[in-house]
Length: 191
Image (cartoon, rainbow, N blue to C red; front, side, top):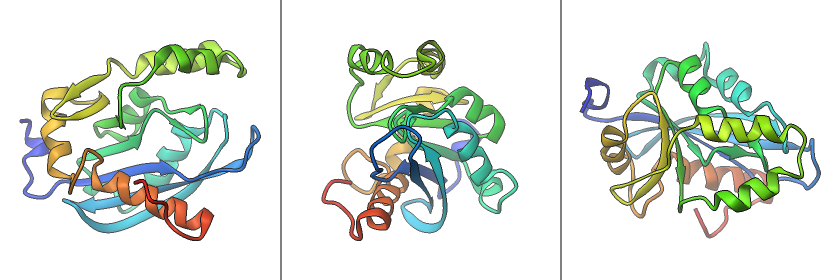
């Protein structure tokens, strides 16, 4: 492993979106949870536009210049999209934050279905390009992910270290629960 992932406790941040109102342009809450290992240590909060094009900029703005970024080893996103099809530019996110960035998925994406859905949105080619720029989808150590800024062979064991149970790293699990509670008044059953 690279020295980056040798720390006794990895400090990671996981971003997830909350349930949102239907309709393009609606404000969708985004929660970012910071964990040291699997222990909650902090949080950032913002909004993206549903089916918009501002996800990457919002995530950078939530971290750049803040107290958490210098402490982080790894930044996670629940999939490559937030707020419907507001696609995160994973490569640009890794470069702008200076940290490896990983899109974690529950299962391999159905790319044909994704491309059919994107065909109904403006700037389809741009969105497809961002999906392709994220790189290949890896299945390692029980995790499904895309990564920029590090290799899959070092990311899979890092994901295992920050996962309490199942295959969802704790920062993403907590971000999901908190986002749902903010919008719905209580967290959901599936995290």
